[in-house]
Length: 268
Image 1 (cartoon, rainbow, N blue to C red):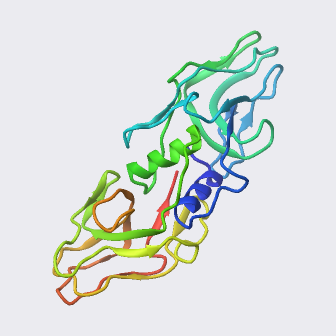
Image 2 (tube, one colour):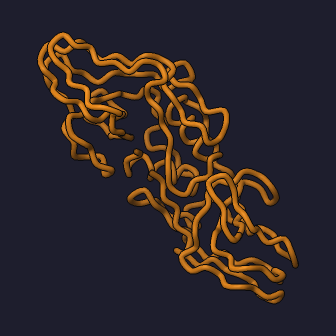
Image 3 (cartoon, rainbow, N blue to C red):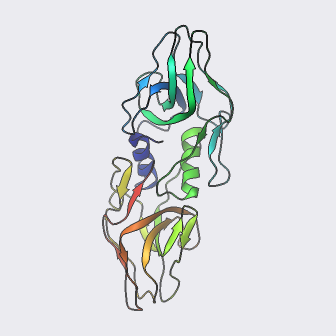
C-alpha cells in the first residue's frame, strides 16, 4: 500500500506536472516491522534489535522486473537479504520501503504473507519474485504501470501537456465503456497544470476547474463515469472515476459539464 506521501507525489507528478521533491529516488531502503505502519507514514514498530539495518536496493531494472504488460504486478528481480540477527527481532509482520537508510519518508508497506519470527543468527530474506507490488484506486492499468516502473526501476516519467476528458456509462481499470460518439461529441482538452489539478492531499486530488464540453452531444444514456486519456482519440486511459453527480440522459442540445471538485482521483 502506498503511503499518502508517495500517493500525493505521484498524483501531482501526473496531474499538475509537479516534479518529485528532491528528485526521483535512486535507492530504496527495505525495512521490517513487528506491527503495522499507517498510510500517513507513521505508526508501526520497525525492528531495532541487534544486527538490524534497512537494506539498500538500487531502483533500476536489475533489482526489479519492469512491468511490460499493463495490469501485471511488479516484482523484485534479486534476492533482498537483511543482516544476520545478533538478537531476537521477534515476530515480523510487515515490510516497508523508505527513501533513506534511517528516518526519511515511508513510501509504501505491505503485510507479509505469513509472520516471520526472527531469532538469533537468522538472516531474513526475500528471494527473487517473492515481493509483488501493484496499486489501487482510480488509475487505469496503463498509468499504474508507468508509476510502478518509475518508482522501482528508475524509468522516466514525462507529464503530458494536455489531458482529454471523456464521459461514458461505465468501465473498469482496463478502459471506459459507453463513450458517446454521436452529435459533435469530442473529448474535452484540459491543460495539465496546478490550476486544473491542485495539489493532492491524503492520497486524493480533485479537478480544480469546471470542464464543459462544446456543442451538441447527441443523445446518450446516463453518463456515470469520467475518464482521462492521453490523446484526443483512442490513446491510453489514465484514470476512470465515477462521477459524484452522474449526468442524466442527454438530448441533442445538451452540453454536459463536469464541475470543479466533481471528479476526484484516489491512489493507494
